[in-house]
Image (cartoon, rainbow, N blue to C red; front, side, top):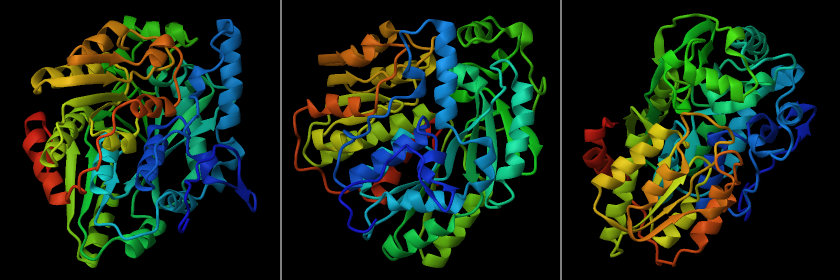
Length: 475
């Protein structure tokens, strides 16, 4: 979109010549889609007020549970890619849709890689785009079951056989996680499609918009998880690091996992997993090694330096980014004493910079994730205010933080300790749209003008200083 004043972000079916449109293929429930939308809006000088999509798990809350599960299954099926259309998915069209979100102009750099709120905040501070190395899609599973992971693998293999041959530049990681997606895993399968080389639309965009010899930053999620190699370019994992559970919890004898299955309509007596033990590999949001090599090759040919940041846990990058923001704000003569703790889809990087706030992003509402935010605040110089945006996960689990834990996060604000009342009202069962973060942040005092864009060398130095003790690898 050249010179467009608005960002195209639709969720309905669009088609050209019968081919599914990217807006329908890329899951609206995925973090990567929301983060892309937020990053693009920030470069357009806009906030996220128009991001009003409500996650599927937020729906039908007043309906009796058996009827609600059936209604959720129908809603998820309508939003998912139909099985007979999987072979029509064109990864290059999706990559083109990604780059079209951004203004077509010169940029002093680019951020590429794994989905993380910190990546978007870094890109916003530097005034550059964030290009994801993956996209996520949900495919309808007509006769699925929450407790049939083995069946999900078989069905996923069939879908991969349709999807991968026309898309040789992709690898697919299938994730079956009742703790993370609740009822939806019984009616859809989740496929994380990861590029194995820099897609042609990315190459054209970088060639046209990246300043000569501009540096590039690649962020890679280095978490590990048991991974089953299910076939050529198709791999499978039961559960995920973001669930708040450990790999050993995904067994019938686990009380924690039994509770998850009960809440999602499954039965641990019927639980079928494809393998009792799998080799450990990088989890679903890592970057494909071949993609990194392809990116490096493009950078060398363009005379650009490629820098890498590997984070062992999302909270390590969140903490390092927040510390970097604080230093950046203070160097510009601002206090850097107001903090916002975001969660999941509740993020608005443009409003954060407009208000001169320090952002700390929680991947989700898992207890261990929220505990990491508490530890970071406890070890930081005191903030005068802490605003907390707890995203309701849409399901109940022992691994989910309670409101008392979120209040403990807010309590680190010396003068203001604010827990968003709208998110709290429906917590943990009723998620809220991304625009709720915008509404909260619009209430913050303006702190303009914004600082000058953060140069990449300064960003790398800040990430190295703050992140190295947390396990961040900057190279």
